Image (cartoon, rainbow, N blue to C red; front, top):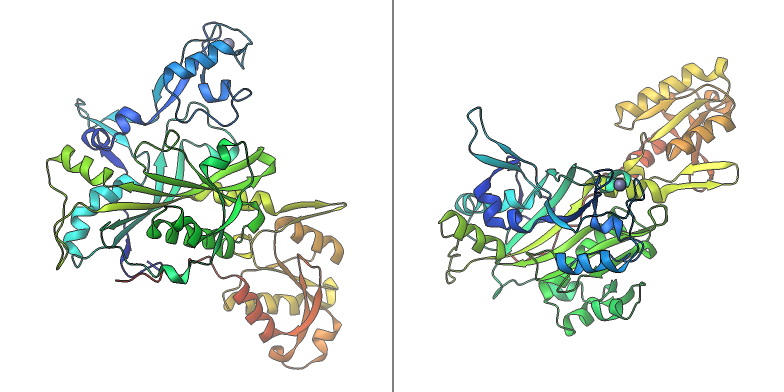
Length: 454
Ligand SMILES: [Zn+2]
């Protein structure tokens, strides 16, 4: 993996035997409280029913506490308006089914890709060099039987996750913390949240460590923050790192900061990724569940059960968020300021006059495509109309071929006008310079390699 030589990407199966999800705790804990309507028989998430009175959600509340909230407030069925709603029941979010034709053996679609990495840990340890940290990454589908899929790509039953599990020795996880200690992060910690504050506070990595967070944890917070800001290119002022309280954290976590981005079209901050310190929860549970001791003895160090630091990232919802933040309506003009790596193509190439310049424009399209730049040809309507069309599609550049292009003899030294979607600025460039500019603009996002100490 590009992130570190100690990290590896694997592509394991998606079907988990029941013993695995029992050991992981998902059979027992991976539930969402649901409420049913006695009149119309519809089922709803308790969180949705109570959203008006408890916008911060129901994380950390017991079923009895949720039942109390339902009694206290004048809740109604969102479908028929009836007040005959049941008390909340835990609804397991996993898709379960019988294996094979005979049945009798239960299995589940993985509710998070992380579990695949824990199952692979022993084998990866054996084929590796018996050293910690060991990172295992999975990018793939996870499945949840959501009671109410909604908010476009935010709550889906099948979705793509990118999750990295870093197995490490808590007594020795040397990282070059000094290289990140001055980075300032927009964090919202539990005490300020409890005081009703919603805005993050820029806090240095060093201050977070002085305040009790482990260096390794903050090191990864900084790297994920830089990935959001510099690689994916979210506007810095939209990002918030929200600390989850003891009661709110997922059942396997010791420390959890959610990466949230403010999306006005969805009513506020939405979670797009997270850094989880899971301790030795996963390997101890899978050791107990499988009867196989998953502790390891790194070369030259005492035997231990590694701890896990998880970096998790929702692929679909990030694409949606970037698309949403990029869409701007400015008077008559609609422009989709997609980051160039997400744009449907890199450049639109236009002949100024259809009759005179089409052959030349097609030569430029061919040259660009040979250089790996996906160029589109468009000759319909006025130049202004063609610019507007590309702006709406999110194509970051346009090139116009005109009379001046044809005045120079050789194709390579001919020039055309390059127009920038965001600034609307135009400049005249020779073909080769233009190819170079467009190629470098469309570099796929890659995280900066971690300066881990092997
Ligand atoms: Zn109803």
